[in-house]
Image 1 (cartoon, rainbow, N blue to C red):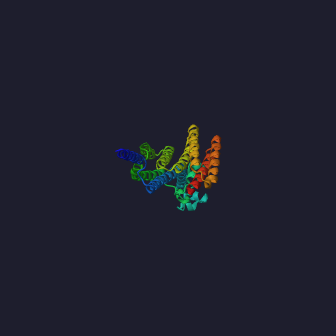
Image 2 (image 1 turned 90 degrees about the horizontal axis):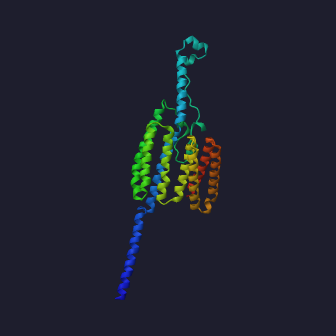
Image 3 (image 1 turned 60 degrees about the horizontal axis):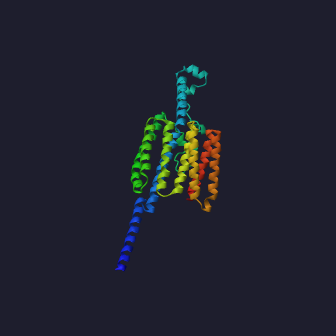
Amino acid sequence: MKKAKIFSVLIIIFLIITLSSCAKQSKNSNLKPDESKQTINAVEELEMELIDIMGQIDLIPYYEKQIKEKKEKEKEQKKQREKPADENKEEGSGEKAEGKEEEFKPQPITNNDTLLLELLEQEESYRSDEQDKQKVPDDIIFIWHEINEKINQLHLKWDDLKPELKKAKVSLGSINGFDDALNSLTIASNKNKFLKTLMDANGLTLYMPQFIKDLKDKKLASLYAIKYHTRQIILNVANSNYLEADKNFKALKNEEKILTAELTEKKFKELLDKLRLSIVNLKNALSLQDINVIKIKGSIIVKNLNAIKEKL
């Protein structure tokens, strides 16, 4: 009888442990390790799309400037054509009067034309070559149309990814937050608001590290968070909001600590030292309050982060 009681107690203990284990598993991701990795890859692909969209938005001031110059040149050429033939001959522009006008050539893109281009060009996923960037449209509305089309595609990709994130028990707050932020980006883009659209697009990248963290990869999550804060600092400075830039820098420093703690292996020491130095240089650049210096220092941080990512 005593043995039967002991056996019954052991059975009860075993059942409690088993049920407790099942409860823990239900709280964690329902995905297997391979599936979790695939979901992280899908999240990274979504960020690649956002990088591409930000790159196109960032070029809008450059296109507006070139369109203005192109129209001014066309206006000048029209004046030349309307002049009497003898006047054109006197001025040595007979060929232009006959329709052989000089083709408009856009100016090269400079640091003053863009905000994030230097950082985005450090990304392997950034898909844009110099010739494509310098194809100036007749009207800026065509560029906004292309951006809106890409954002529409982003909605479709997000709808495909969302069920996987829910299955993996990713925070519903993060998922709903991304939904709201994507809608905000769509509205800003349809209203052709340059800086608001660029900031909303970068704002969406803040959700990537949150998703990845819930998918159990802290080091990768911190890496993407540092990238977000670096870009956001530049956008805040462009908006003359140094208070927010300082807040983002503090958040960046917190993520740096997490990344350093996660990457304790010897092979990362030199890379982490470079990253730390580049972050110190960004802090010094912020004190100068010169956006071009800040952009340069920010691009070096992204370069160092990508070197770390290659080793992960």
